[in-house]
Image 1 (cartoon, rainbow, N blue to C red):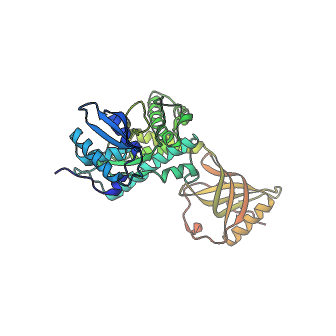
Image 2 (cartoon, rainbow, N blue to C red):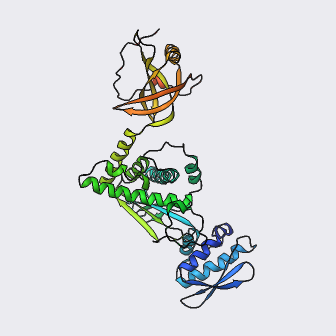
Image 3 (spheres, rainbow, N blue to C red):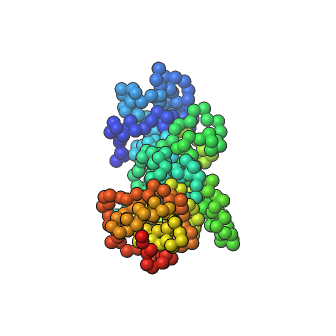
Length: 396
């Protein structure tokens, strides 16, 4: 028995632009207007006619879409559900992340599925950050335009063929587009995101090949403008951790044309390990301006001849407890002494940099005590970092 799509909300999810773009891609050619709000399309295969509305504000829009769906399914000898899936995504860039780590019935363990969805989101988020401004690294939650974009990306139905996470990315329809692949400056932000996703992963694959031929980290660093970043590398590495790797593909929206219908890139597990190392190297080299750090003072040191003092604090960096050093002026150093005596947390703002194996907060400012703190950093074990301050703090 063939499936019929009757749900009004589901039918209204198909846009007029999507209907028009799909019909033209399948060989239906515009013939002329039909009334005030519709247009006639004629099949180049059998001469049948299709009436496509130009607006979804029609009272019977859902019924009209239902009739179009039935006629398309009949002409293509396909089930309505199959045609519906293509239609509902025809005005979106469809991102698919395929993992081979699935059972024969196409299912995966819950924790594996959650990891796939989370890392797929991180992959696209990194591309959105690059579309905002290409950088080697990004801090989560710091780029509002990227977060706003991600709030409009929808999780589609998973697909069989191993296990496929489907993300539906919004794309504005083109108006009078003549160039299939405009320069990036002419693209809307939404299409630029998916172009940076594809470009960044292509650049990652090329960089891996160069490294295998004896190249250096420069192969990765030179591709930042194409969408490559530590975040993209880490997300792709996490996705390729399981089974035989991961395949990422983009089916471009029919309403905004592209030179090819579909783009795809495969990474093996060993390639993922190289991407993770590239991510680590990116992170190790990058400074973070205007970073707020909160933590517990562990050591202070100031010689009698000095007016400034060194401070080490236990703080959470990228989800891990780290030791952070900073040089404070006399008034700020006094705040640190008081915090250390009372075991009270402090906060500071500055440029966070990794120098050698240690974190430093350069040019710290806005040093202040934190009155109420829910988590007890003092009770948490410090990650294995050797302190190079004197073992006995010099207090005044």
